[in-house]
Image 1: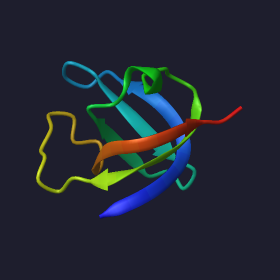
Image 2: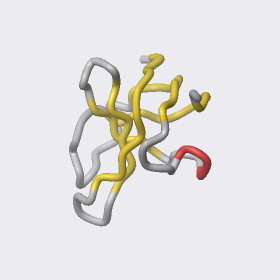
Image 3: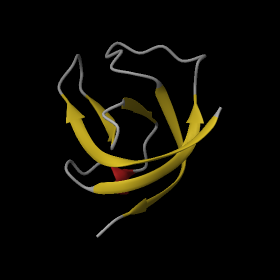
Length: 74
């Protein structure tokens, strides 16, 4: 399923650590294979991607989101 989410990037210290997108509605998404430019805690972004229901993770903080496109907000 393809979605577009606006929110804030956060580094979660669960297990080996993971990057998450916390949407404006409070929903957390675990970023799957996030680009390096997206791995900056606290930045506001709009991310487009695919929710991967076939991927499991140790963190299990929310749906896994594979990023296809993103824009950093000012």
